[in-house]
Length: 231
Ligand SMILES: *[C@@H]1O[C@H](CO)[C@@H](O)[C@H](O)[C@H]1NC(C)=O
Ligand SMILES: *[C@@H]1O[C@H](CO)[C@@H](O)[C@H](O)[C@H]1NC(C)=O
Image (cartoon, rainbow, N blue to C red):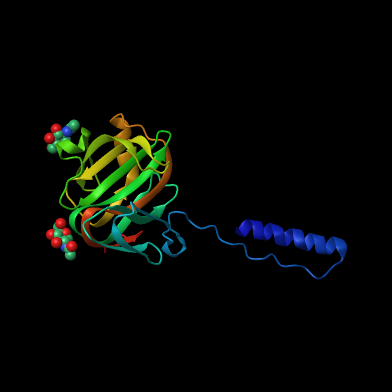
């Protein structure tokens, strides 16, 4: 930067001499390139998503920056709400907050890929039902991965004629389920994606990815801040 300024000053001086012009334009200060590793939370904008099956009673409040709040009641229906990125993909996801379900609910890094169409969950916490754990879930365990301070179990199942980002479709769900539940921390999503692929679970092109609260026939409240790790 400094060297360029000296060169432009020299060029300007030579130009002034050559033209006999005394009004030398001083070089303008150049904007500094931003170091991409620096946190710049204020400048980060988040993608927001709220899906409701039409029967769940849910109030989703989209707060500033990475904040959102969900209150749900009625113990009926299914919804998925949260904030994140579009497209998603390999990322270091910080988040914090509270997750207080009564009944079945998930707090996860949740997203989709296309070609193949995949719905994935990196489950950080859940309510009364551990996903994939009952015979009716019809899920298959593919392995385990230890990352970000806990073991996660890798599971998969097929969803037949279910709602998707491409309408009603048949597709696979991939699950990475944290053994040591938490509501706040840092998630290296790429470690989970690599574990899926290493287990034979192919991923496609990333669509959206959010820090999601999902409720199923339950009630509860969640207040989440995406982009901020617990202090
Ligand atoms: C919330 O869900 C729990 C667990 O299913 C249930 O026992 C409770 O009655 C529900 N509370 C309300 C206010 O609906
Ligand atoms: C994953 O870990 C669990 C608990 O330690 C173990 O029972 C299971 O066999 C492991 N599964 C695979 C597929 O490695």
